[in-house]
Image (cartoon, rainbow, N blue to C red):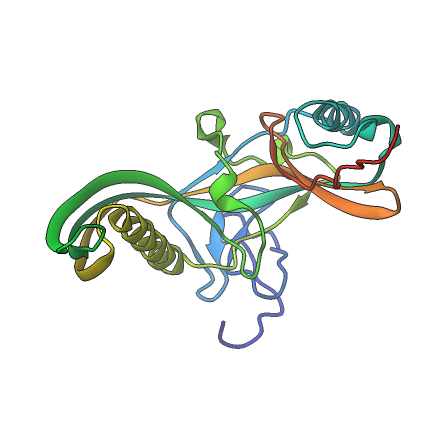
Length: 251
């Protein structure tokens, strides 16, 4: 971002916009317009919101239920664990409709003599990119409930929740989606050949959708150690959770 913008107003309603260092795409809390800070112009794209459906008490219940179910969890975890922190954040995701057509040639070395094989991979995706840099959010493990999206409306956001804006532009998002899809297709091709000698992918792109989704970040304590859990606020599903090691001592 060139220079430091001290104040910027919404190009639609004139209200002041607040943002943090590094954020590029900012949403007006008053009218919902999306603005690119570097150009101070409205950003024409579909901006949607997925509503949080769980309060803190309900989140506690979901967490205790998760602790009590499944394998490889210490006995009595739900009763002994202490919830230290619960924070609801609306994270900025981009959904990039992308069709990728890959042609590859490689050497199949699992037989003797080795042979050259060619193949094609043709797939369409709604590729998900988190609009934050240096984030450890498990994007590939998150099935965003896009069917529940509504037009962005700040009035539907929980009062104490944090709303994070995108630190990536639409062009950066599209480039990242292409790179990740290509890496995915290389992985798929590696199931068929052992060594690639040719690889080319062509893309067709649709219009990116910008959506804020509710994510609960939870920290709990068990036997003086801290563990993290990420929960989908729209579905109540645990996206990823740290599990303490099993205690194989006598009970």
